[in-house]
Image 1: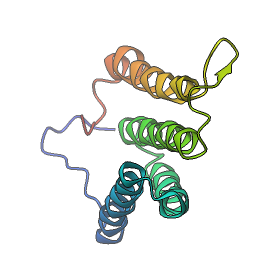
Image 2: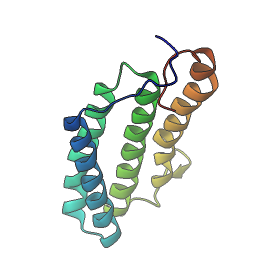
Image 3: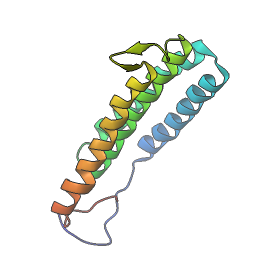
Length: 133
C-alpha cells in the first residue's frame, strides 16, 4: 500500500448506520444492567455482540480496524459475562481461586493483548501502510 498522507478510510454509509445502531443496543444493555432489568439486559447481549462481530469481520482487511474491533468484541463479551454473573447472583462465588465476576478479566486482558500486538508489534513494522490510528 502507498503512504500517501491524504489517504482516507471511508466507512460506507450502511456500515456507519450499523455502528450507530450498535451503540444504541450497547447502551440499552448497560442501562438494563444498571437498572437490573434482567430480561432486557440478557436479550441485548445478542444484537450488541452480533453487530460487534460483523463490524470486525467487515474491517478485517485493515489490521488497525480489525484489532480495535476485536478488542471491542471481547470487551462486550467480558462486560456481558460480568452483567450475567450479577443478574444470576453468582458474581461473588469462588471459582478457580477467584470470584466469578473476576473471570471477566480473561476477555478484558485478551482485548489488551490484541491492542498490545497492534501498537507494539504490528504498527511499528508497517509504518508505510495507511492506518486509521
